[in-house]
Each structure stands twice: as structure tokens, then as C-alpha cells.
Amino acid sequence: MKLNITCIPGDGIGPEIVAEAKKVLDKVATVYGHEITYKDILMGGASIDVHGIPLTDEAIADAKSADAVLMGSIGGDTTTSPWYKLPPDKRPEAGLLKIRKALNLFANLRPAVLYEELADACPLRKDIIEAGFDMLIMRELTGGLYFGERRTIEENGIRKAIDTLTYDENEIRRIAIKGFDIAMKRRKKVTSVDKANVLDSSRLWRKVVEEVAQDYPEVTLEHMLVDNCAMQLVKDPAQFDVILTENMFGDILSDEASMVTGSIGMLASASLNDSKFGLYEPSHGSAPDIAGKDIANPIATILSAAMMLRYSFDLDKEADAVEAAVKAVLNKGYRTGDIMSEGCTLVGCKKMGDLLTNEIV
Ligand code: IPM
Ligand code: MG
Image (cartoon, rainbow, N blue to C red; front, top):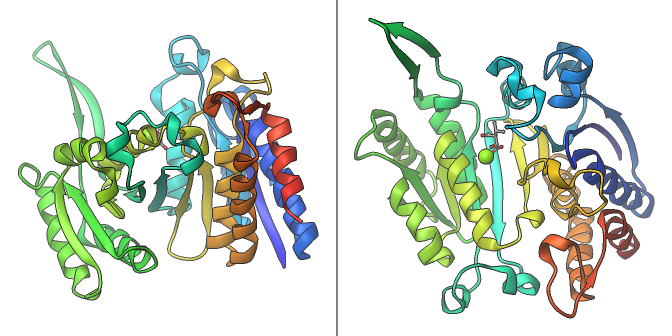
């Protein structure tokens, strides 16, 4: 099969981790007889440095012409980097929001899994994690507060900022369908998270999710208020299968969920449109403080590449092989600094990439 992939190495540790993911993908291609072509584009700070803006129209066109996009990370230190002296719509993050909208990537899948091998790194009490946990946050990614009208004005000498939160039923329906579809392939439970005791957008969300649920009689649906959900994630994470939620709630809850796994350096993500196209990136950020030191953990990006093989190319066997390689390398006791524990062997970013590559045979 021919795989036409656009890469966004990005900023901070992005270029290093994407390089390792390419290494693994190339090995997959050799072993399973595929042909990969890559094209790199600039986004975030890397694009600002060259073009003055975080994402050009040419870069969007390149991304659109690919079968899938593999991304590292974007952004820098918000207190020291000159990128954050620019107006908000010229900063690195604006590039990410723009590409999501331009490619219609409305469904963001963020798995949060407790790796048995890394259970010691989990910050939760042992009795809480005894049952393990494996949840998937399905976050709406192109609507809500992050894309609503916003402005800052002055009224009678008082500065005032306005952000608007809007959802129409079609936006809610399409993400709900994605959530239920994926629940059917998992443990068949959807927890829809909202703030229906306060927000109109949440009340509509709840109604539309209930309508969609009618078509999935096998799936158990429950509703949970977002503040309670934040608490439940720490109290009893095993109760969750698919968490279905709007953009900002999903942003916040997915960071919390990844932290409770204790291994954010391991967590992948996919942002999909309504065809097979997707943008795949690790759940973590650009970690500018450790960039260029060959100590970053490339596993989240490599697992994102596995998600790409699975969701954009239907190459399940190949995706399984990458995931199995990760398990095998962890079982052999190799760790990057972020997941290191006593008795294990500390390795750098490149070495981890090599070890994973060698497991794919
Ligand atoms: C994420 C990030 C982005 C978001 C930022 C960088 C705009 O936090 O992917 O979760 O809020 O969506
Ligand atoms: Mg976030």
C-alpha cells in the first residue's frame, strides 16, 4: 500500500520524537511491504520563525493532499519565548486551532490507559488502581468556546472580554455518533460529560446525545456533570470507557486523565474528520526545557503513528505490531527518564526509537 504522510515536526521536542516515529514507520513499511512518502510542513513557532505566521495556506494545502498527518508538538515557553509577544492569532497555538478547523478534524480521540508495566508511576492509591483503567476521551474539537466569537472591549472605562460558547445540533450529533461507534468496539459504555445544570449548550448536548443513543441499544449511556467527572477520574477511573464531551471540557479532562495514568509520555491521540483522514499527535506538549537533549520519550508519538495505521489506513496488523513492540520494550525494562523506575535501564529518545524499531520483524 502507498502511504502519503505529511509530517509536522513542530517545536521543542517535536522534531526528535517525529524522527523516531518515522524510523518505526519505515521499518513497518519494509516488513509489511508498504511504500511511505513523507512531506514535512512547518507549523507553530517553527513556521513563525520562517513565515511570520504559525500556519501558511500552502502548509494547509500540503496537509490536505496527504492521506494523514503525523505531528510532534508545537509551542514554546509562554513566559520567555518571543512567540508569545505576538498577537494571540499569530502565536503557535493558533496554527493548531487553524489546521483543526481547516481539515474539519472535529473528533479528538485521547486514550488514557494504565500500563501495567508502569503502574508504579501512577499517582493514585494502589487500591484505586487495582482494577486498572482504560478509557478513551472523545473530545469535540472544532466548536464551542475555542471557536466562538471573542473580543475585548472597553465599556465606560472598564475593560471587558467576551468569549462565546455555541453548539448546533449537527455538531453535537456527529461527535456523539463517533463516540457511540467507538464504544461499540470497546466496552459499550458512554459517559457524556456536560454542565447541563447551568449551560444551555450542555442541555442541548444532552438531548442530542440521547437521540443518538437510541440507535445504539447495546451501549449504556450515562450523563455526568463535568465537575463531578473531574472528581470521579481520581476517585474511580475504572468506571470509564468512552467519555464523550465538548471542546473545553475535553481539553481539561484529557490532561487530568493523562496525568492519572502517570505516564503522559506514553499517550497518543488522533483527530479525525468524517472520512479516514486524521491528524495524529502525542497528548503531551513540546517540553521546550528538554528539547534537543535526546531525553524525550518518543513512545506517545510512535503510538500515535500506530493509531494512524489503524484509523487512516486500516492496517490493524501493522498497528498491533507497533503496540506490541512498545509492550515488549517495556517488559525488557527499558525506560526513558519520564517513566524511569528502579531496576530499569535508562535510555534516550533515539535509543528508545531503535529498540522499538528492532522489535518489529
Ligand atoms: C490540546 C492543547 C490545545 C487545545 C492548545 C495548544 C490550543 O491544549 O491539544 O489539548 O487546547 O486544544
Ligand atoms: Mg490541552
